[in-house]
Length: 432
Ligand SMILES: [Zn+2]
Image (cartoon, rainbow, N blue to C red; front, side):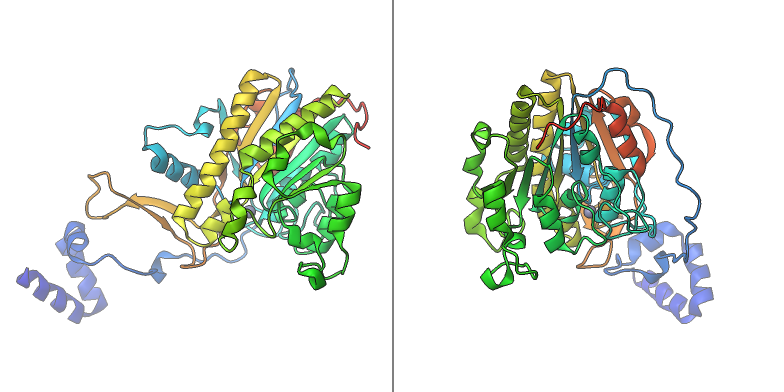
């Protein structure tokens, strides 16, 4: 050991070139076994590329014609969820040979998620691509690169008698649910977003975000002074406790706003509120049962978007336990939907993500020893503040039209594949 130490010291004193030569001579195994694991970021592992070219047209995937159409569509978005998050959840909940709900889906593919002006997208632009089939700039919601509103999938399906719901575990005004409902130049215009949501034909808008409906002077977040929660109470039906989800029939054909928390659900700052906040599964079951009532009264089918919003936030905060909690909530929702689709062979279920967050890696616990079952989960973007990454995300599909969700898709293809599955008969809206 002492000899090796002397060699190392001598090698360093020989300067960079001589040292490198000596290291080469000693071999990789010696280096791996005798040098400490770097504790921080190594600058020289990063490569910086300026101005990646994205001026070519987005290739349009050729889709198969769907003969048996989907009466209903349930779309899950795990915000910030790529293959690493799914794999980590599989390992965490039952080991490498266990299977999670998405593993049971017969079709899967991968989605490229860049936006019109960035290699690394945000939730707003990527979800706008899912909802409108058009690439837009980061931060934009339901508008194209020129800022013009583009029809979204809930508006298109409304013309064919579908009823739509949006579910999230964030504020309902957050980027992903909003991208399926509103048209604004920026995701941060939450006063405008909430007004457009209240004016929309979406029958169930469920999640958190009461504060975004209440003026600042009354303890809310609204800068425009409008007390939107009063308007929601008269025009729509407001529910704030998950017990109110038990009887979907009692709301008639009114729009239902479920605002179960001041901000997001399961907020660490408000533990006293958690017992009245629903899971994704509970919000989904309510939305499906309520949609069925509309179908009994003449509507043709339903579209539901359910977002596991905080998978992304767990990646941003580099918090693995938080990530697993949110993946588990999503898992229960997917299981419920899959069971529903298995029993009703007319429902397409799609699970995907808008982007990856946190650069999650699954590594050996000790890089000097792979041959054991110890594993290290680590986030690999900015320490303490993970960012989105440009990695593609997985997509999984079950049910009518699922054959189009294979291979490589652009996020705009996801919109086209969803519509290819839907029964677009242009029979007219069934919502007042
Ligand atoms: Zn996102």
